[in-house]
Image (cartoon, rainbow, N blue to C red; front, side):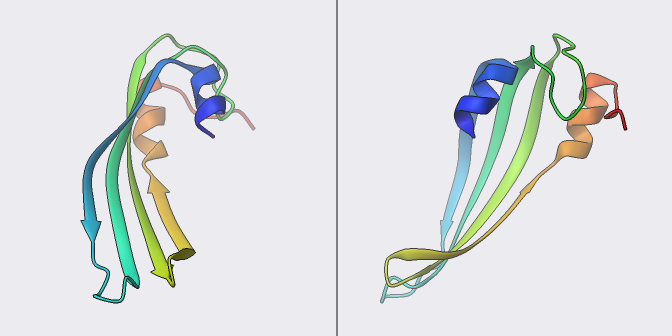
Length: 92
């Protein structure tokens, strides 16, 4: 995914702001990551032609770890704010 995003956004950066480790002593449990993606919109993305605008998308990732393996992942990106930043909506 990072490689693909790098083709759509010049100067693409993924910045981790916080990691929350809620695993127990046995190593099992949840880990959360709060981050931001930055870049200049230089390629078509989600049906929107390049705008040349600097954009930022906040992300949240939650992973459940069992026996040193990721067994479940929940993630959310704030694409609504991205559409507002570029002043466009995807075409149908």
